[in-house]
Length: 178
Image (cartoon, rainbow, N blue to C red; front, top):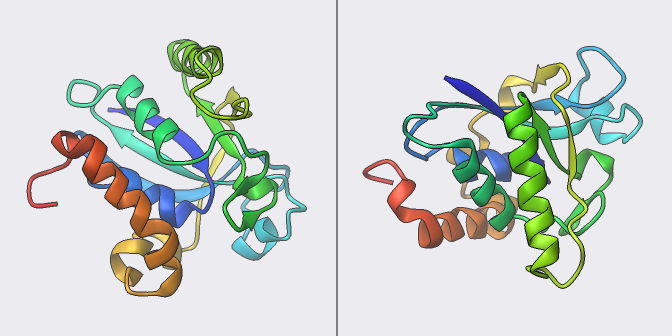
């Protein structure tokens, strides 16, 4: 099993995008890239710790590749907005790939360059690509959030469209019954 760590706005949404993919064993919401050890949600939300809300994916590269995960990452958020995804603003919501190997770094940078060269978005991709720092799992109530609270307005208006986009674009990569 390999690991991938992505930040693409609120971790509730990002978790929901990746957790039903074939080959994904676990998706954990958490924090990475900041100064404090063991940050809390309240501290991260203050914007003062430097952490991003991220997900750490444990995946089987024989079933789903890091490059496939990257493609889903790029297509399910706006990588052109600095420190913002929709109404969620602040450094904790930045677009980031925290790579775990030289190969992950190479692939992330290659994708970013390609997207910019092809003008895939109206504005340049500003996604941070950095070595994976220490990951801190978020509090338990943040885990599996969309599946437990999908009826709530934020999930309906922000997370659900991303989940539907994954179904439409990558339905063949989803586990049966999803």
